[in-house]
Length: 317
Image: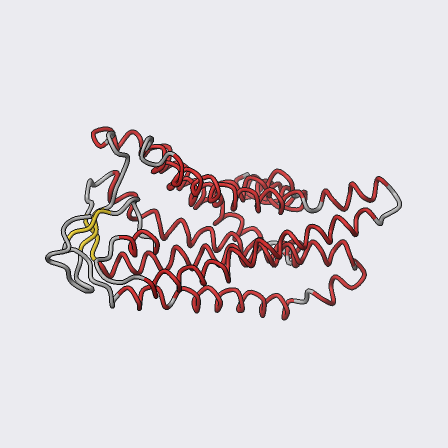
């Protein structure tokens, strides 16, 4: 952080940070990151298109998957522009308003994804616990309300962040820790009292990621308890197999965040380039892996893909 002697409110410029010590090779280092981003955008777009156009996939599980793909797309679109700006154009400067807007969308889409993962956990629990009433519990109307509630919660929890940032004083130029803007990073650069901002940020995380992860764990405890009550070993395995895709998605979403948190507290200053790489990947890995996981593990998605390719071959012929 630069000097606070010339601090301003709402008119600061923030400098994006790439890979420390590798500035001369940013173009080459960023190629894998750009490829992952491109595949994530294409994969999630195709999942959305497939679910929208295939009536066989208009079921609760796949409608929630389309919500997950939409949140992944939003996360990619929120982070990709500043990555391109830094790694390919070499432009580090970002005005306060753009930085605050990016911060809002990154955190909002992260909270949406977390909420959708919780809804998918509930979907799996209902499907295993009470399969006869599955269709009557998770109607299209109910799913629309759940989706709206997830979106409203994400907006309400993140709206105070950018508003409260405007009351803080920042140096004219501040150096960010990443190639995008995060709430904790911006608050740490402020020259004025940040107690309210830190409290609001903590409450926001606890009411989103903290609450969702706890309820997802509870859902799987109840799922495991229900499965153990099934007499047939074959039926037990079949029931558990329906949860594999979702469980992989949950691990892909939460484990990189946990790894980044540990790295920041233990070896961040010893390996700054590794910390930056992990910070980039923890936003890119879930959008990249989710379409792959569901294409590999979901028979209906694979059948939908096969139908699309066969139809395309027929059209070409």
